[in-house]
Length: 302
Image (cartoon, rainbow, N blue to C red; front, side, top):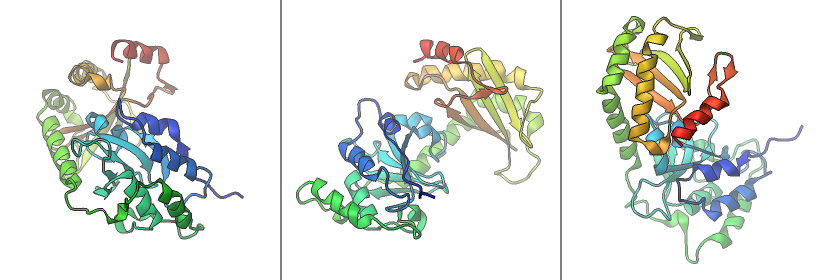
């Protein structure tokens, strides 16, 4: 049985970068070097791009132009370039968004990230970026490949970490601000009121009743996640409100277009905390959403 190799999706890497920003040649060359090599030989990850929508951060969709996430870890963590760090977008720091709430700058540049992989410089919360113990290590080969590609005199691992922006502070502030935004949003307040019959029975502040919504053109579906997705009586009542919310968000952020999926938690105090998906084709009923309806949405909100 052949051993698994790294999953590489160059097209998704290109898409992950903000409009007007090209994927760095070094990253594409690294993808070519990695392609076909045993998974885990220089770290336990895959090179596949993703939008910020799916990153482990609260309400991350509005941050699409601030990140280019090109690496995925087995636990759902994401790694990529952070373009919100300052005015210099030519050498953005590389950050990790951990599935357990870790928000760290992993390297001051892409060169630094690859050099740190080659030096086996990851442990603790980012141990998945170290070679797998059951796979033949190829970090020496990676270091040899990288060396001639570095600018003269560049020593990525020796770059000072002082002066780098506070990514943890940025992520924490973003989450607080977005939680406050939605906690005081009039439509979320009305949604919580209309769904009051579904308030969670638990007393812990993190207890919530989960819902998922799909809207594609004229198609609509809302379900409560209780022993699996279930229909609920108020689904039709909240449809106009959800459609109005969708349009309001399109007007506020036209570059994102219209969302197709919304997941939210209803908490005991009536707060509604949402997350939106602008990219995935949802399932409505037992079938994928109608493409003609999606095209109608795209025609008026590209």
